[in-house]
Image: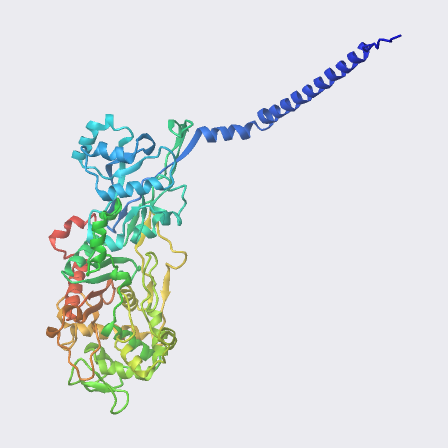
Length: 624
């Protein structure tokens, strides 16, 4: 008998399992919905402001608007650095097919130089915001602008932009004093706020332009623009205008500057003039100069190579960095040093032969006057520029007191307050020679320094500063270029105030000035060519050797190459009682000190008596 197996379903149990699954699923779904709603609440309510700002950051850009650069004026209101409107050809790289396509399109429209294409392609590699235009050809002429305008409709991505550019109306004579602006480089951005300079084309490089960049640049504005997903600007949402840079007024006198530059003629050289009453620099000339406008929009490789490779070194600022032996112009300071430390007096007499020997039978240090000067005192030593007197004085003093005293006049360091790059020159000492050459200091080294030769080197700015200190009788100001910034006097963090050089015997100021005055008025004075003025002059001539003569060797200029001729130097100030101007002038390889002396007299006539040639009236400004 077979038994059939039967399965009976438990429907009640199945319903319970199904119900449990539904409940579990519902709870899970509710939990997910709760989490989602909680997240939405967190994002939409609690974090609303945060994500609204992020959304705006993706949709809205803040662009920097470069400010208008401040102007630079001379003391009489003559504009020395101006802003001029120009039109430049710019390209939006995102809107062109390729650089090759662009070259082909522009080939028959306008001439783009290889240097301009090179600069454009270099800028393509640099970081910039999307759709920011890049300048391809700066400063279009009217004819170029017209040709481009005709074809703009088919040159997608190419546009003509109106811009302000720096312009220097008086060029070469002012290049080293005013300096210039140039295109911003990555290195420039390391010293400024990158955000502030976003969109700016220029930055001050040298001179006043470089030192006062923070003042002249101003404060950039902000443009709030809406962009699409590709970063292209759709519309401007708001704008904060930029604050223009502050204009600067200098102590510089434009007429005096140009006149001094022209008086140097074809010689290389420098002229620095200072007002002893303020420390204000009235002229800062380095010749030859260069056209600073070449650098504004980016100098071509050809033009830069011509300047850089020129044997006349037009880019070298002789006024601040030129190192020259001060020669006999050092003698008034040596005289004061001897008086200060008791190594000389006004009454002591000295028999000046045609040479000086440290030891009998030793080397002969020659005087410029082969037969000697006979019996003289300190005053006559200055008037006739007696080398042997200062040889023996330096021998007696030694280098340590010489170094210590001359440093108080600014030799061996720069007192200049507001220009970069001024050299310290060389004021030698025992420690300096040991560090430089690992050699001891010899008496002969001191003897050479006694007449401003040997290891001693000074810049024109240092020489002008030192003579202005004598003019001010030790009550002096550090030299500075800028008088006013905006409508307020320039300040120099406490360094701009009066300084005092006190002598053991203060009457020696007037006595040394009397001796320097007799350099001009005495029949044997080395500066007697400057006689015949209606004001008084105190000065000192100098002839700086370019190479050393051997014992017994005679200097014969007509047998030497021009580059081996002596430098011609002169220091002076006027009027004596109430000095208005102190000058140092040097003609490189000029030979006779008569050249800088005559130049100085003409500048005195011009500045003190207003005797400028008529051709300089265009630089007169509103001076009285």
